[in-house]
Length: 223
Ligand code: 5RP
Image (cartoon, rainbow, N blue to C red; front, side, top):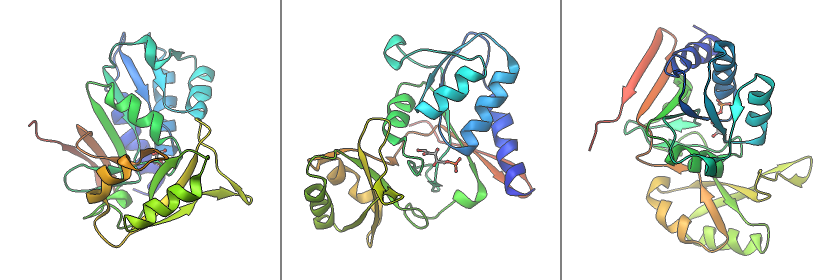
């Protein structure tokens, strides 16, 4: 299987988990977009919460009924992609810039299913992808210095020479570290100016991995 086939395989498997009447969180990114398409094709009655404006637009175009996260008490299921996953099913997310809404929606879900291809597999988070950290624009260079002090090497995400804005109007600092980056999760979160980081620890219940030889399903043991 090539990468497109791997993505399609996990997307179809994830979409098969969606049943009529469910309340579902819809992720952001290329793989999540395939799930949104697959769900739209089913033409079933359900309620969905989108994790980004881009996903909301796609879902609406596909005839999926959207509500705000505040309109639901809990979601049955959230399906989203990731940029890295490790053997504990911990994740880095946010290369698409939607990490804050993605985390809010995933936390509201009874089951969080992550859809990835084999290339996202790492032994330790941060091995391949930088960690996106969403910060408020006000005083962001000071926030960057505080993150440097923690041992991170933060780089402002830019497009055409301008800071990339998240759906919440914030900036993203893509961070690398010399130490295991997951160990810094709490310290990053406590840093003034930080809105959220892309470490999704102990959140995924299932990771569906598209591999060259087929689909692999990984489940987090219940604790
Ligand atoms: C967006 C995300 C995406 O889920 C992540 O970047 C994976 O995207 P793709 O399926 O395009 O590789 O976290 O904020």
